[in-house]
Image (cartoon, rainbow, N blue to C red):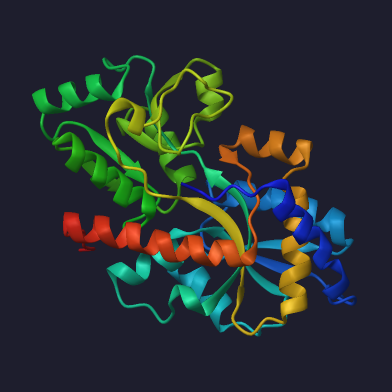
Length: 316
């Protein structure tokens, strides 16, 4: 479960301002998103950049560096000059999961956790006409029709891919994985019925319109806007693989810069306007210190490794 920080912890964060580097930022800061524009990783980055720009009075520019399930953008951040002007802004899978699946030029320790911006609420979405309304009903249908159904992910080796395969393993069903470069590319195929199940949050607008129904959410708790949609665990399918988004910096970034960015991001995380906008796109904002995120990432590496080993999960 994601770390929840008490008010005392946030007060400590606020107290770090005295150590912050007074002249940072002096120029635009690049926020590297390792996925294409328009997807579930890109949308929150746009909101984060807007609020950071308001806080610091300097541009925070989102740059999409997509490819290889997030590996290309992550490598760019790791190789960049650690001066505080290139920051990773995206989900945890590219630097935790990918190194477990294939050789990468980096490991998670090559990035310094700064602050989160939210837990990602993914859901199993199906079209309104689908003949199942719960995960149990989906399981029964898939058992009766092995190999007939398909589900999407934003790329082979993504945490979404692993989650989808974990569900098929726990549910003991055969559902075909269809990888895309991003959820935004999968959405049209899903809405036109060429994919049966979409794992994402990009279809939330269609849920509000009554065109799509959610069978379950893959977060640690229910989404406040959809309180009647139970989590996977609540429905008897314990496939909680932690997916969250955050800011990370290359190793060597001056600590005062890490401190001030962490402080301001955590202040933003409790801003009511920010929280409301993030909930709309499927994120549950929360606060955490850099040290707490470091411990969280170490724990999550063990969780991902456990699933990879148990499932013998490999990239073809």
